[in-house]
Image (cartoon, rainbow, N blue to C red):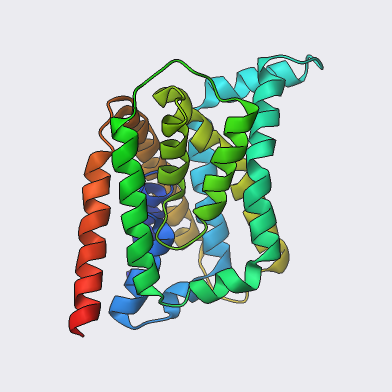
Length: 264
């Protein structure tokens, strides 16, 4: 029963933090520090792959009309809106892919209870969200130059404490891109990266741990349903310019961590 409850919690956390701008990696590092427990970093690779699959599917479900239109355009084998959007997505993936390959060892070192770094990056995330809320909304589409800059923001968001969705959506809005289009591009651009990460985990991962089918099922369903709800909610918040509440949350968590660290 405890393992099933744990799978449920993991699924909910994955579904929420994949879409809400609060940094799942940062919160994981804080959880490890608070509990003085490294077990969270060694969760079953099979469960990790399962939860990532759930959030990827949730994204595809929310944007199913967009995805179907893109696929339809691609099969026309000519330059159109779908092929352009696909090219923009591929272009935006390059910075994160390069950073992940070239700086893999350095990045691993950063994910070792570096809570001061996490706190500072949460402050940066909060600032981005706060600035994005104050940006003027337009009807501008994502361009090729924009895709590169948003991709760079996604690469920087590999650092613990910087929210991927927060960084990419905020960067898009600050570039003058329409808020709804910013959220759409941000969430769709991560699907190929999630699938790539899943493939890498499947090829390189250690699946020696024991995770039951019921655990995987509960985790998947929880992440999938929570992910859909979080994704839809996030789109509404972006359109209404209400990201500041997440900014305040990031500031508060960072302040508490830095205070505890200073006193301790």
